[in-house]
Length: 352
Image (tube, rainbow, N blue to C red; front, side):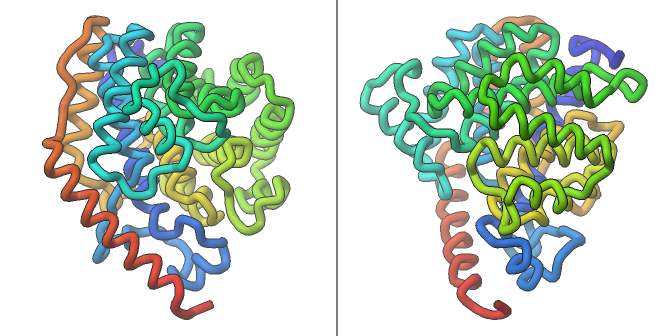
């Protein structure tokens, strides 16, 4: 077994958050493009930051992971306090004018501001909003599956009430939990599957997760697996597509950060979210699993969040989260929106 969460907390938390940010930033320029179109525009792998003059920027996927970490810090892991803390962070996040916010999350945030409680603010959607913030929950509550399930449900239902959304989020959370509680001698793909399937009631999602584990054990390529799921043009934002592909890439390349992200992102489609999930899962193995130095983004804030989260996890007491000034976040989002528009116009140009 790995060292306990109390002994080695901040490393997995930081790896999860930084891995999420890297996968998000690398996948963002390719979001919405098919495999072939992305390869023509970006000349295929190897991946590098391309979003803003050779630098990477993160989107809502990273924001959600950090907000979830902050809500855990503010609540000390108490489920009801966590639900309330995350709901307030989503409210204020909406006011910072984030670009690329999903429709379901947008509607849920509006409902929160209209006075709906977080238990009734969610909308019926099986998008990825709940999944993108799930890995940090699994890294945090890695010794109590029932408590983890409660946290996942609380997080998911604030924005997404379709049961498939929370089941997919739980599959990702359990993957993170399994990664931080197993070493190479005890890690077994079938055991992860056995741990996860009791929480996945949807037959289609369960079947695809079984297939992901089978193909990862066989050493199949990500492209082969995606084609088998009918995702030749890219991975959609439907949780029953995103989660099996992310789990496959994590299991297939969990020791190789670069290979895992290239496998996931080069499939096309919802590349920032798939990249963020895969990066977060593989990143929980940090520092044993490292990322290329040229991929790392500004780490001081994420390290501070990880430290506060580790301290709160150890004491099980609410603490003050690490914040960034709200005006700076809003200014950053305005710049981000302008860059998004530039990329949108760029996609109208050759090569086709």
